[in-house]
Image 1: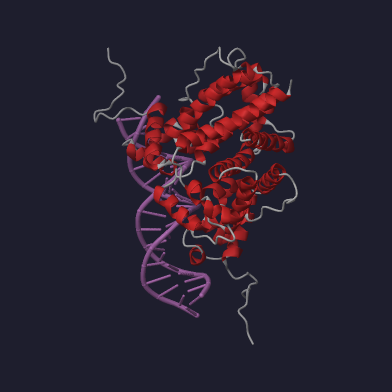
Image 2: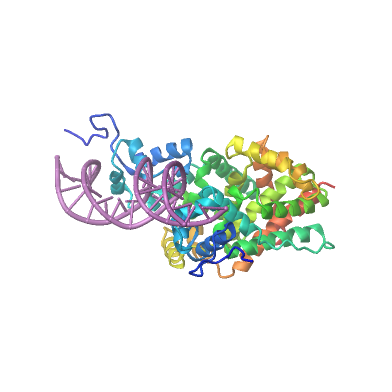
Length: 221
Length: 221
DNA sequence: ACCTGAACACCGTTCAAGT
DNA sequence: ACCTGAACACCGTTCAAGT
């Protein structure tokens, strides 16, 4: 009995949503999200641009699926016995870890991936943790939304994550600013443009956020 | 004595960086940032696309200038006699106010407007406030960066800011999810997708951030 | 100094046609 | 069911030429 082959004569895998998305992730990781065009993707897959339209109705839906793919990679395992704030912290750290691997995915996730299974699972998890901590539905919603965007913006805002020679140029620019007008910028030119310890950058941002939420919870008692 | 006219025979203002940017702001406010293309901008200005290249070397620089223009609109007046945390809060609220008027400008400001006078002035102000509060240069840098991106993401993350019918659709989607699998999402479908009180959304986010920073300052004593 | 015309190499997308 | 060819209406950008 013959079964549908998943490779053609030339050894190329047969197209599917999963195959297209994998290629898109690889392309974005290599050359950034802007490089992910229908035509370029098709070229990398050895196929005509129009072939992709069979698997995705248009580019927006492809991008939404791409965001869903990335958030689906987040490791949501937490110690159920731990304090809720620790669980909360763990999930956020996992999200940040995934985003650091795919820094281009942040905007995609917030803007268009909200119906993907990965997003739903993550959101359900965070809401459950916060509801368990005593927050109301409205509060838990506000906090989870805020936490998600904080994680995003931490990654987007890490200094030196854009081209290293570009940041070097900005640093020189800051250093040569008029001291009497921008004393604090000149003083902070280094820290503003370079990030010698990314881990502490993320640690700082997450700690600040979690501390704020914990304080908010304490105020409710 | 004749002077260079700033309007041509047809009454169109003569092109300049400022004129181009004003038109770009109006266009983005009306139709979103994606509508701001060189060709469309030229059309609205009654001019050839190539005319813009005399005033901006390329589109990236135009976009950077656009970001600079918006952050330059932020009202940085604060009560110098107030507590540093109040000053900090005031500046952030002013930033949010400006961003809510031009929600498309957030990414522009973080990514490419960092050499504009408006950005420098705002950054200098925030650094000064934080340094005055006793934070080190490194700490003040980290906090100011974090605060900036928090303000951004608050605006970007406000529910219902994208097309109202689109959010309505997502709400229905959340409501019809399997209850046994996503109980908390189903429960929070309303708050997750609609924002009946935007002011409290922003108030919440800023309060949380400022509270975290204040707590951090207190821990240093 | 400031703007135009023509041209180039890109986009996303539709629609009819092939296998 | 899955993919291709040809075509359309868009992009940003360069470069020589006009006033």
